[in-house]
Structure formats: structure tokens, C-alpha cells
Length: 79
Image (cartoon, rainbow, N blue to C red):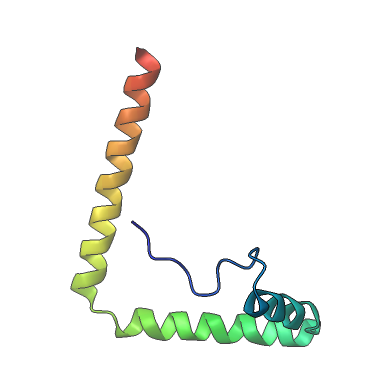
């Protein structure tokens, strides 16, 4: 089961969710762009830290999962 993203459930009526929605709505365009850039830099650093073997293994697993799901959809269409 995929891990729940941090702060992903903003539709809930909690004070934390309300505060996050309010702070996000008050951001300026420059702040939004800066936060996007910072997030991209963090992701690039994470990808660099990850070993090549681990990345290759994860990509292979994804390919296999896609192949299996495609096969399942094709089989369902034929029936």
C-alpha cells in the first residue's frame, strides 16, 4: 500500500488542515515558485544519493508491474 503523503489530507476539517490551506492561499507567486524550485532541488539531491543499483531495481519492478497490469486489461477486453 502506498505511503500516505505528508499533509495530503487537506480536505479534512481540522485546525492543522485549515491553517495549511490558509497559509497556502496567502502565498505570493514568487513564494510558490521558490518553494517549487526548492522541492525540485531536494528531489534531485535524493536521486543523487540513491544508488544506481537500487534505482535500476526499482525501475525494473515498475516495468514488470506495468507489463502485468497491461496484460490483465488486454485479457479482460478479450473476454
